[in-house]
Length: 445
Ligand code: HMG
Image (cartoon, rainbow, N blue to C red; front, side, top):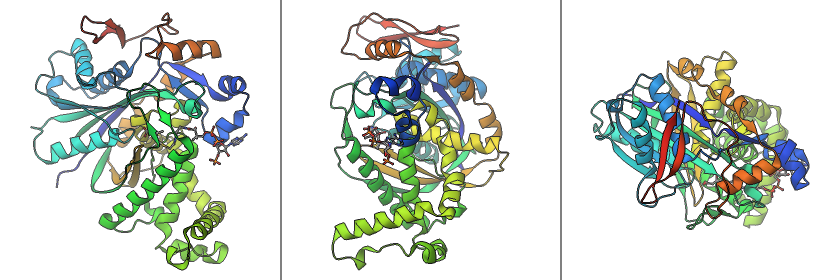
């Protein structure tokens, strides 16, 4: 069977930055370590006044197409995953295609365009759609462009405010991919949950503490479902596990859950038994609360073992390096985690070709998905081409007053004077409203 997967990726961060320990913490009267150590975040990426989900998505896609030497005719499908959409009818992918047609010869008139919604997991669902389209033989040799783009803003004063972020990830899905091949096997954990939602409102309504528990419950189910089709996974055979990363502290919990789950039926539990005992089994407990207490106690001991710490440092921690500097990008977050892992491997001179990653995606509402990826032999060149470090360094550092202004500019319910903090350079910008209320864009050289 021909391999199908991600041939190339590009990342585009919002042009502004909010420093969490330096600017946010003093204003909130909180200990800076709550953010750096507790949540695991140093900064949030923010969109300048002329940026939005279309400009960031189109900028990432433009860079990706130029780098790969692609023309519009090479693309048969454009899917945008977002939970920050501004139009219930016309998909964001049409706006993105309109932008790209300003800078490329040719057009996307014969490409299928759409928009995917299921909170943060929609980016991975769009990958699935592209994978299935190619597998079904409907692509006529063309590739799919998948763009995950969000301005993940919360209302001021909301507990989620510290986890905000803005950016886009563009991915090219093709046969014989250079970066990673996607597995056919997948596992799902899905249930009707009310943990985070935006019922016709711009900023989310969030039950933050509960959302953490729902994430972990659905992820555990997805792991179980994945193993039921792919067979048992041995944690030490996995190079990296990029998880959806609303903030790195969440992934600390997911990593522990993943390790506990996938060591259950392997020799690792036996080897650790003398040190920390055996994992509690549900059938050995009369009531749920006692079982939960025993699991918590086991997990607390497990995370203190040297074996777990080494595994976490090698397998999970490298997935968090970009996220620490940008915050939550919703649909793009798990794809940023994958890029972080590969970038760390490149920096450490690790040979990853042929190695396996397990990817854990999640969207509130709620659904988790697990699949495997095999690293392709062109991964080093693809990751070397990323300019994410330069982009992060070039961001304008917002003062608290700047932050309040730019947050208001992006609040659709407020009518405030637009102030720009940076000058656009070789990128698409928002250029005002059209006669039917559509958003308009132009390319600035
Ligand atoms: P909070 O209540 O302000 O924070 O918000 P906290 O008091 O729970 O503290 C956070 C962590 O910092 C804790 O660590 C504290 O102990 C620690 P933990 O016990 O959890 O390991 N801490 C400190 N550490 C060191 N020094 C200190 C210090 N102080 C505290 N001085 C909350 C936390 C997650 C509720 C909030 O950020 C929130 O509401 N976030 C938005 C929702 C969210 O991100 N949920 C994650 C799961 S749902 C998801 O991922 C989906 C999502 O991406 C949306 C989608 O799918 O579309 C959100």
